[in-house]
Length: 316
Ligand SMILES: [Zn+2]
Ligand SMILES: [Zn+2]
Image: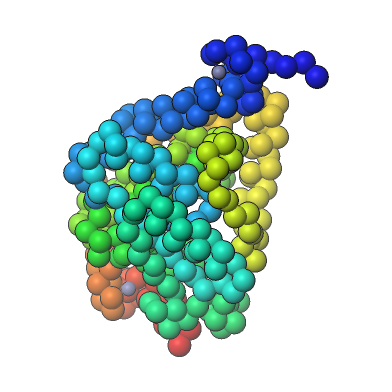
């Protein structure tokens, strides 16, 4: 096999970046990877001096790598870093990643807050799924977002950092289009409401391909658990992911171009809705933020409680 030299330094290369027509050795890849991360944080003003950032730390590769990178960023920029792990209560699955989350936080001296579905609602996800026939992922998503937001607010965090990588974001963009949910896209980079109860989210890995996150973890000796959630049957996302990977293989750079189109469209769409009000009201049961009923819509009992509390109501 012919050894391809690193495009930067000429040493034997270890990583092929097809989208950039470049081959990099381990050292140059790590430099490239970290530089892109710091540049992205600056590009979107994701972290500002003295802010409090809470990482949503699942213990999977993306969030653990994100924790390491933010911890590294602290050496250049003074800000406060903490982590939140949500334990859904999935037997035989969450234990392993929870252990990784705790270990990495100890190692990097980052305080960790663990919140559980069980303590919040009285039910673990396993128990919820015995009570309802609904799809696990949609229930899990509602409770996870709810607890992450609430937990971040309790930590007085300014922002929640999420480990979504380029692949996740490109998939989400396509899925929202295929489902005709433009408003969901519109609030993806910035919330539409500036309600103080709603902690905004940053995705510093949004320009980083998933494959490179795994590569970086491997080269840096960061422990990774590849356990799959037993409820993982997001058929639609899996389908889009497969199609997108096949297209990327054939037309390198597709994922980056989807992201670039999205960022451009997002700013145009936001100009189009300037001055429109996106009101947030607060749940009559728990006080957490929930979308207010649109103008002209009747306000009833249902619209005054949040999705989380309606779901808990269904379980009882
Ligand atoms: Zn090199
Ligand atoms: Zn509520």
